[in-house]
Length: 378
Ligand SMILES: *Cc1c(COP(=O)(O)O)cnc(C)c1O
Image (cartoon, rainbow, N blue to C red; front, side):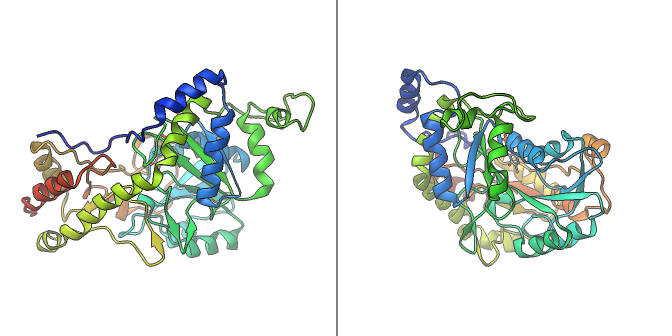
């Protein structure tokens, strides 16, 4: 029997043809025709005011920090339960990531803990929709509005995810996407920033293009371009945009497959879960998730490692996810944790993520389910 991988990039079909077309066009640098088409798809799909492809989600988060003018001494609140990028993008500006705890069912930033961590140095709240299940956006928006803070959505999991019909990543000042090959659509590495506040649109282009007004020049709006602002180089090559467009065009098919796996887990693990004290994922009212991941909350840490090794024996790769950032070596050095994060500490020791990718067949899903239901917790 073949190994069932935890995650695997899906071949959409047109990648090679599009990359070949880009190669032949001799436009290999960023902001070529494939970048334009991919960007248009992304804007139409998400309803964002504006979007720019970037070299990664991490870089999109860095660009957001640059646009918000985060500076040494500033504080940005973020969940302890997230990928390191959410925090490194704050720390790279010299600002301090302030770690707060998460909600025990969704694993999303807890608005009450976020509010309790605000000081007069707080500039923004960076949120993550874990598995593309929306954070409590109304509560977070109320906290942000009350204190004049920006919200940035680390939207890496959330292409195809909605809250009350609105695409995630379009609620905050910025949303950031990832096309890393563990995500639903991929160009290997890559990302995008969604810009929901028009005031930042022009400067975002400049900061992304080494501080130049080259984008305006390419549109014929100025007759030469020059260095006008600070910046970096966050443009992906048009070759990668070509690959990405091929993936975007098959997004609905990818999602159909991923939802089939997700729904298989959710429907068929219920009885086993209640017999074994395991919690399945909950999707609150108003949330439409993108089948980015499926997790089980095991009753104990021994059951986390126990289930992962039981599945490994059957050549099925499952993993734990996100070690708390507040107690990580860099988190202790570069961050601040005003209040303990017991939910993150406890749940990160019990969470198991199951294999989920568009290449999984129904037989694969059944095999994973069969292997899981052989396991007895406790
Ligand atoms: C994958 C991921 C990132 C990093 O994305 P890159 O494109 O690899 O930089 C950031 N945040 C979260 C929540 C992620 O899952």
